[in-house]
Length: 302
Image (cartoon, rainbow, N blue to C red; front, top):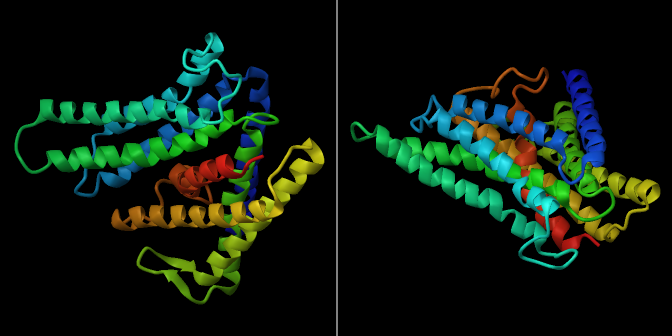
């Protein structure tokens, strides 16, 4: 199982790196990143609909799927509009708060999805007892996949060498390094259960292995960026802190998706990805780690 996970994990990381590298020729449109986000988050939306459908929430599949895709598309709106002409808000070449402003687009789209969910359920209302649960389940699903996923998408437009390539590689390296380290050390030396009510197989030893691997991945990426790209990097203490907090967030993301599957009485979100389960099982750590990495990068990046 470990060999299969490593093989597929390496293949997926290589594919993402290739997509990001090729997309540099199409900046700031990034069509390959757009297609990747649509496919990955779209499939994750289908999986969360399937998971929630066995609970009392029973979300509207059409609202969740269309809502997530709408949020994905909205992430490109500020960058495409700026590429087509002068930005109407700012005349500066670069506004340090621009990444925060860009998040307003997916947020406004989410608000529109929220309002649509109410109106759509109002139009279908027949008897009391299920409407509020459907709206709540739909909005939670859209927020979990669409809003959290937006932080991952938006990192592509960070300022710096190769645009957001380095922040994205650092995020994926730390999150997936954490997954691999936790799984490996947990299998070898795991004795004490970490949170058995949510995930009976995860151990304290595995969590520590994940933290060590996450910090190591952060340091390796920073060292490689300095040596190969000659990119300015924050202090080594900040790089160490990045690995620590992003690794912690990644493990929390894994545990929270385990809670969802536990509540839905499912082992995996689907069988789409051999060795991992579903698409949601692959990106669960990234969904929680992305907002943390996004904020940390804005605070400490040189």
